[in-house]
Structures are given as structure tokens and as C-alpha cells.
Length: 289
Image (cartoon, rainbow, N blue to C red; front, top):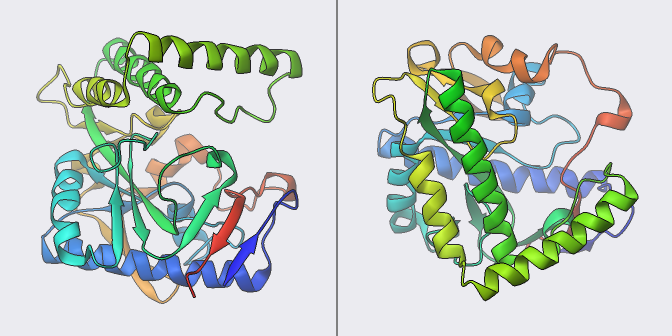
């Protein structure tokens, strides 16, 4: 079953329900590997809000987000292909040289899910869950901000080594957007000229992300997220994780989930207005049937 969406930017109810079922299947298999290898994960972003507010998906949401501390993330990406590589692709910058993002995806083989934002991407795209590594970060704000700025800029450069015309924010001013498009193409050309390759930018990102100068810090952050500072955790507050119902399965959340979510989302128990109920706007979906 395949479905193409152009400008409608919405899903048929039946398609969204089916997408949710496939994503739950992926999540269940992810959780199974985590349990087998004693790896800790927790849901985050819209998935966490959905778990608390809806005991499942936010009704219009179309993805699942989980996080792991870096050591558990790397262990998962090592063992998961051995456990279920026949059914899933485990993608990050180590496994796919044309992958533009600094977090991982667990993708169901035989499916297609092309996000509107990544139509230009040249790597295998299927129905997935996102897996975000949390890295140790500095307690001192000045140092932490330096690391955030550095990793963010490297991550943007990484995208431009691969894509000359990345999607830009929809709310960007028209003139500014045109200037930015030209700038992106110029930088893409310069990076090719000086042989700044995706391998080099991915290695530079990891060098910074994994090199917290405060070795005793109990603070962790997702450097790939633009407002990651709003969703930091301390392991002494977040762990051990707790369980919450999510549709017909059980998922893990940080123990202090309210304090975790409020800095980023405010009163997350209130539904946002209709115009703010966004999702990833898949350009094309194929369930592989």
C-alpha cells in the first residue's frame, strides 16, 4: 500500500492509524533488544507528551522519539543489527555515509516514508523511530553553551556537505530565504572544493559531543536538538526510569517527567490550537504490502 501526499499536508485517518501500528511494532522490537541487553531508554518530545496526556500517540503525531545515554545508544547500534538486521536498518552516520542527521533511525525494511523536509536526501528512507543519544555536558553554562554552539554549527555543515538545497524554515522572510538558499549552495560548493566530507564533519561532531570537559558532571543533553538545553536530564533525577502505558504497550519515561517536559513545552497537558498541531508531513508512504 502506497500513498503520495503533495500539498495537502495531512493524512487519511486510516493511513495514520496504520502508520501508528507499524511504528508501535518497531518500538516494541526496540524495547525487546533494550531489555535483552539491559539498556536504558526513555521516550521524549511528542512521544513523551503523548504518553502522559493521551496514554499513546498525540492524535496527529506521526513519529516516535526515544533517547538513550551515549554508551547505551552505541551498544544498541552495535547489537541490534545482529538481533534483527533481517527486518530493520539501523542508520546513523556510521552506517550510512549519506545520512545527514546526528542521531539514529531504526527503519523497517521494505517500507518507504519520505518526509517533506528530506525529499532531497539520498539515503534509504522507510517507516522509522528516531533514537537520540544524550551526551554528558558541562554544569557551567558558559562552557555548555560553547559546546552547544560548536556541535550545532558542525551539524549544519554536515548537512551542507550532502545537500546543496536543504529545506529552510517556512516562516523565514522571502528575501532572507532566497539569500540563504544561495548561501547554502555556495557553502556546498566550497565544502566540495576543500574536500570537507561527511566523514570529517561527523567525526568532528562526535569529538565535541563526547568530550565533556567536566568529567564528574551528572548533566546530559541532546546536542542535535536546537533547544536541547530545555530538555537536559540529571541521571540522579531521571533514573531509574518509570513505566507508562502507550497504546497497547508499556514504555519508559524519566522519573521526573514533569520537570523534564515543562521547560520546553510549558503546560503540555493542554492541547495546542489547531494551527499548531504539526507533524512531519510525509511526502510519500509505502507500507511495503
